Amino acid sequence: MTQYIHPQFTPEILTTYQGYHLQIFSSGRAKVTLQGEGRSQVHYYAEAPKRDREALARQKARTGQVLRDHYRIVDQLLETLPDGRVLRFYEQSNRNNTADNAHMVVSIERDCLWLVMVEVVHTWHLPTPLAQLLLMGQGPKTGVPSVFNEYMSSLEHDWEDAIFEVDHYQYGVRDQSLLQETRLSQKTLALQTASHPTMSPVTPREPQSAPSRTQLHHEYPDGSLVDPYEEVPAPED
Image 1: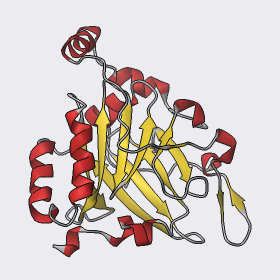
Image 2 (image 1 turned 90 degrees about the vertical axis):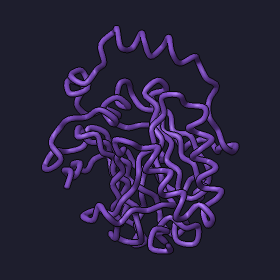
Image 3 (image 1 turned 60 degrees about the vertical axis):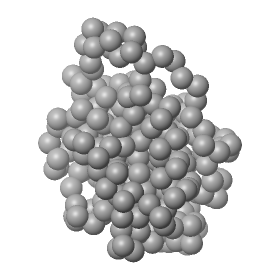
Image 4 (image 1 turned 180 degrees about the horizontal axis):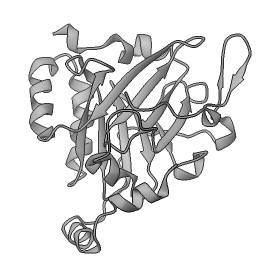
């Protein structure tokens, strides 16, 4: 059972990372790259299974007794998001190496994703209609750069709950034309709005304010300062 509890997301190891990159691809997958000391990185992909609630139930059946608080947070999010879908995490290049102690919840209605790492919750407000692309993307899965690539520095809030607004992002959506292709029809949007009433924000715990745009940098131990926004987004593997 412990093989599904990845040490990278446990509090003891997670707090040693200096931040992470969040990328979203046109294929409908997200990527979280944990930034270690120096240039070391750990890469994870997140995607929604076709039957995401059933997949979540299978994970809870095998690790629910150990990760009670983690699943409680995920369940609370899903209960308040009628259109919410849950994405599973797996290690890059190994789709079978699933991490049960990390999940991503996405809502198209709210244009938002929640990254849940054990009990740490990071809320990312997405530029419209990026949530649609994340759940419905049909782009190629190799060789295409991300359409969204932002960096979170743990130096600002020490791995506590946080909310990141669109105004905090340096670039936001990199390819507006691609998002236009994935926009839902006005009729579909109207049906979704009618069936899902307006909901209050989901905050499992009181989050800290997110760092301002000028603070989203990463400083390596040797003193060099790297701005991830200026780097060319790595293509999807």
